[in-house]
Length: 593
Image (tube, rainbow, N blue to C red; front, side, top):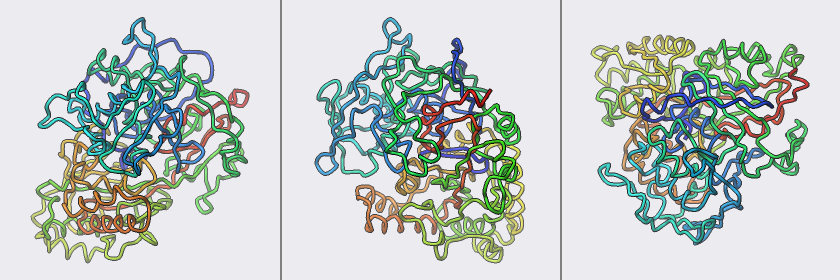
């Protein structure tokens, strides 16, 4: 799910088509007194605050403050999930083909003018059905339909882009009462409950969608811990505490590991959340001003830019240096379920295709690229380089990070031979390849290195640095021959990465390389209904190796992210992909002041 820009180091996964009206600011409300968190966004921010239309990390960061899902990733253990809008975990029935859900009592939508008398009402089962139906509605772009497509009995997208009928019954949605319902799946799917932790499946009220229309994405209404205060696109995004937020508490002390307990993470156990009264996001694309804002105390935490790693850490030991320790900074290193890559549009007439000459061209590019040089220059050597689309620690990841025969550079001799095999000896006759990435000074330097590496074998690229939102739009429309993203796995299962190559998910879905091979689809459809185990892992390996052989992408790298925070910030356990963890943060005002 979460997609990230490769060259901009915190960027992410697919965005949405929204009318200009949906990107206007909402009138600011009075800023409350109390605890305020100033936080960074590393791109130009979200494109929409409508979860059905969002897909990037920055859509997620915004939406997670306003909306909630039935389940959430556990703050104390990201390999688990727990109830959020539910009273308890779903009951598994019929060997996983059916689930029974019970909604939590007392959960209300935020007060908003879309409701009678401006007062939010209680969440009911019909809201769940309505919210999930929105993913199948062509009017919402269907970029997230891949999450539920073919999953629920009777939930189908209309043919030929016809209008979606929200009143039509869905056999798989079985309402027992306003607070209890069942969902019948077309087949047991292991990932289903993990999908219910993803922000795109957040619960929204039909009143707000109907009232605001296309502007709903800039006038969000949910059940979350915060309400939107102001959104100035590409500048700032601010939230205030939701005064009607339901009872939700910081995790119990017994749930924290010994290491986390020693780090003080259990001290807030049992405290009602959200703790902070206000969140203020600033969009700071460039690394230098972002780092300086943190150093000056204007940002509560930062994902440390690799360029500035040596400012706070010893490059050899990877430990915080004396000055940083003296300043009292906290930090945590997190190996991300990450897939940094350079991608090909498989429908492009030059770099796409499945014939031997087309595959040879992509392999030539792969052998010409030196990922280790990128890793050393731009990531301080902290990334894990690996073959294929499955990140470290997940089933199907290659032993030693290598797959025999995978086209990993640098091997300029092989690159030249393959280039000739593709019909372009020494690059002759090959027009410059348009390559799109997110616009930043760091990315410009990365493009210079890529241009040099490919130029060594006669391949020329036409570098196009564009705003992140434009980059997503171009890939959604299949208009980028080559591009760079990173994919941050939405949940800890390689299926999430392998779904990116399933042909039903082509753009504007998550399959932005528009990879389509029937043999792959057959393996994926077989694996998705299997429980974790050796047989499923064997299928994952087959799919992994098929992707490596066809080269729809060149990669991969997984980042070791270093999160650093101010001495006055409390309860910090950075959790990529679960962006509602800000509700747990607190500030020691005596240290800040």
